[in-house]
Length: 178
Image (cartoon, rainbow, N blue to C red; front, side, top):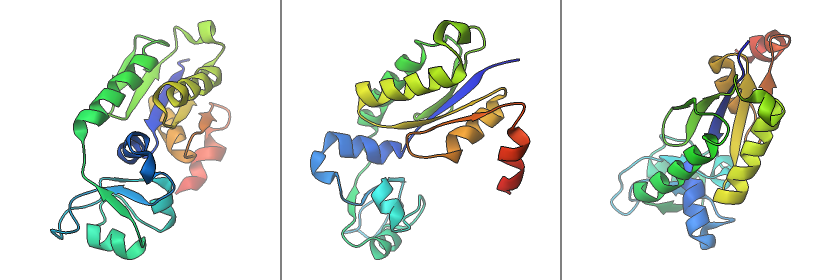
């Protein structure tokens, strides 16, 4: 049986922006187009903006109406790319089987290395800890016997969480999600 992990950086673009500009911390933030030009959509938002109901895909006007005082920042893909490469570098410490799924998430096949690191959950927790310590942002990780369930696990608890879905409990954890 395989051991697969899926790591997903939490609110990636917005987290990078808040990391690079400490004045944004504690405020609702969205990476988006220009409110002054009245165009653009939200590409990413931080946890604070989420509490106001801001969603990816909202127009800047919709997001501003939902979250008074929201700060819009333009996307800076060069910065995201640098952090992304570092995240993939951390993942490669645990296995050479890393499959990207965008700039902020990937699968790790740890089937061959799981015994070296103490199990799938141990790898996931250490991976999250290293990402937080080395990059300054959080990630959620799913651990399972299939890639699909690992991805589902990384989406189940956010931010900064590990979710394990096993062959013995996947029915309990997954079937009721509908």
